[in-house]
Image (cartoon, rainbow over all chains, first blue to last red; front, side):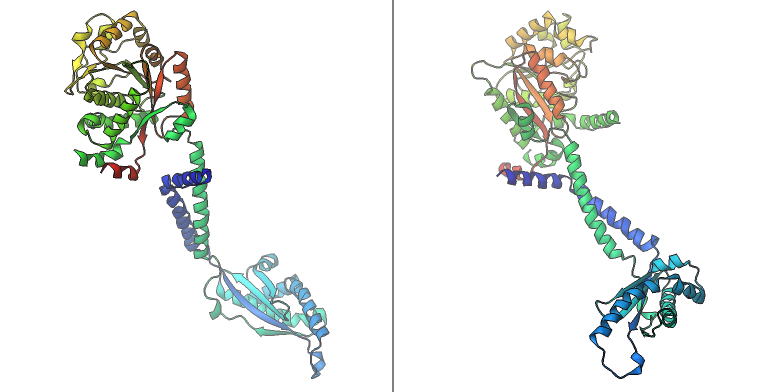
Length: 235
Length: 235
């Protein structure tokens, strides 16, 4: 019984501030929409995939489990190498981009599909063309450098980055941002409503009077401004 | 800021003051009139042994609906066949003459300063059985006047001529007038306004009135938000 009453109170409180409850999320959504669509520069991502496999001196032999495992372990090493200045410096020279190695480093994500021998190099950039160019150059430089560094020749470009695939920006995602803004805005407005309710120490209902004063209630009179319309029909 | 808003509020009030204030006369069968009749009944039943004939109506702060309550309660009591007198004892900000559209050239202050007799000064309203003693010229020393010997004499005279006497008092938190009056009358009625009266202030008001041995009959809750459901009963 007690619980239903308090739940009712909560709903009543929220209902009373309905406008605020709607307004805040709407403002949040509008704000994020403006920021996402007009202010943030869109970023494009382009991927290139590398296959790591031992050529094994051309022997026509099936791969053994050990070899595959060795390759997978090597991939971790490659991840580090790709993001090393040894690779990135030639890339910058070759592509003629206006970036430092650490800037470029931040744009690159190297990942492997679980337990496979395929490495994916993703490059994020504000220009899709540059992203493709960078991804491909990194792959090429890596492919040509790796025999020198590791003394192995087991890297092949599986699929180079292509421009047409990455035309739509990956970030910002305006709709996702707006959805997050809506949820955050709603939570914020609920919090504001309850803070306002908590700070409001005025008498509101008959119950407040009984609790605060311990005096009998002689009666209550409805708000006359809102009642005025309805009272007209009684005349 | 609040001050100017109050002024604006007052202005809009005065535009339809007569209609608003005297709802119990103008719309006899409206829900609000019914609410005042409920209050009347509750007042009538609030004392068993002692007959209650003089009342002071006050509140914690200004603008919580004292004058409106006095006017409408007096009307529903007059409709019940009692002869009723309203005394505008709010000598700081008198309003009764506006409410009933009467002149305020002579009133309570003249009676208390022995410039005129009660019978001569009381004005009849166009509502049966209802008379008003307006405030009169605003005196420099309201509290002194209310606490005078002449006040007691005036009250006795009033109760000899009328069945019921209502005193419209200034707010308790502002001045001591209401406390002085509450000590002299049979019953004190506290007016609160939903969403306006502060809990702390009304508790303090009750304490102040208790100190003067006021017989607080109970509380009226004004400006209660209109609940749509409550209409169905009446319509």
